[in-house]
Length: 192
Image (cartoon, rainbow, N blue to C red; front, side):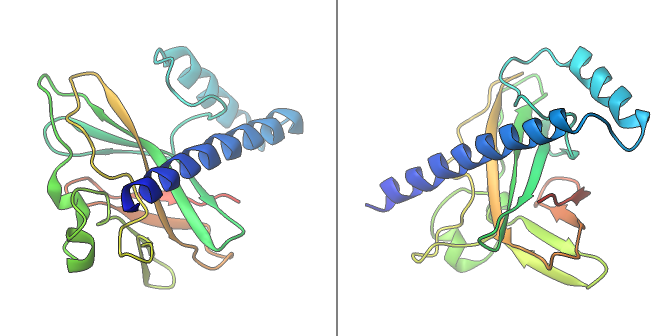
């Protein structure tokens, strides 16, 4: 029953990510203009460079790209605030290396409760630098992290979609630092 629950959470989070992405595209596309031409130029340049058909439609450019070990690259596409009081960070991990690689076990963090449930991205945190507060990945009632789990070995050039859910910072917090063990850190913007 626990595996089915985790699969339902993953499917639900994926559906939520797609729905939010489509909604953002509809809002962004129908708004008719941006704050400056720089964003439009960046979006056009990204669209021209993008050759991966599996990339999410409706996103202009990633929020961040974080280098990890063994050629792994974490691209964060969105950090969406939900009315339910959480933030979902979504993206993908790509293997830019020459050989197959696994997401390091250190990404699950060192909390005993999360470690008990195997490989995950449970070690991810969001840090509010202004309020000096750290937000940890949410867990279900059995202590499983609400993140992508049991990630396969990634072939060279291949990628896997990933997500992590956190408690939402106050609405006046727009930017947070995303951290994941073995990957670089980056300042990302929360939308919604």
